[in-house]
Image (cartoon, rainbow, N blue to C red; front, side, top):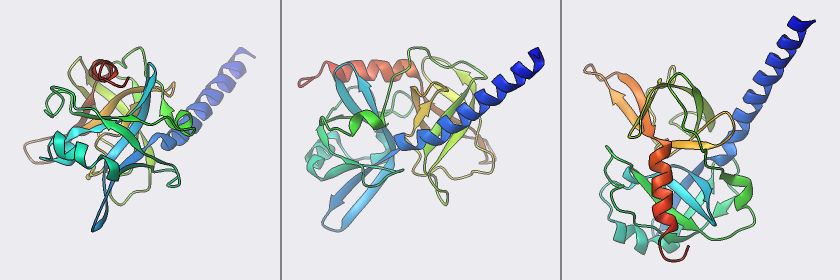
Length: 229
């Protein structure tokens, strides 16, 4: 009887995690800029509620050498489009230029404060209070080349206050467009963002890496202290 209860509990847990992983797709957004030539999409991002405001978070390097001033000037042409349901389109209220986040070897976060809209709550991720540790499994919600929007399970190889390394996704060699995608724990909380790949000497992928929870919290705290919050 005890063994049966354990098996039932395990099956329920696996089903719950699997269902949650699929549900996490609704947290993936793409930053879209519309200009005279049409619309251009950049990276994957997510909406995070911190204190009294909601923010859109993605990787800073998705814009390359574009300056913060140029991003601010383009604000009225920016929309965040939900990858799971493209009818969900959210506009930014302000671009938040935060010091020391452009360097890919550091935080590499791009943050916008969002307007208060009724559909924010459904698509906003809660911020985790505990960082994931080595060997823990987390999820990346993103769209990568030639693949539909998916939630990928990632095992943590190493984690510290500056960088988290993840196992690469089996069979995936191109991650263009996934930069800035939310890294989510089994509770459905955001614990970081995906940034890129570590490459071996033979140019094969060694592992993936991302921004740790500590850096995410520190950057959101800076954002919350800027005017308008």
